Image (cartoon, rainbow, N blue to C red):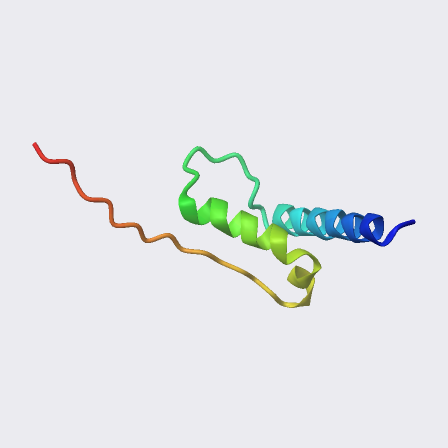
Length: 71
């Protein structure tokens, strides 16, 4: 195997394990009120991969101030 192939395979395994960790935490439950914070937390948990089982618990909050439209 080439070094690039091994690196790609490790990346896929890393992300799959992150997805499993997000699933174990119940982040993929079917709720209709998906928010920026919920999506971001799922993404960061997936990227953290196996670190989730070593105590990493990433949470993201999205505080966006959207101006009200003028009337």
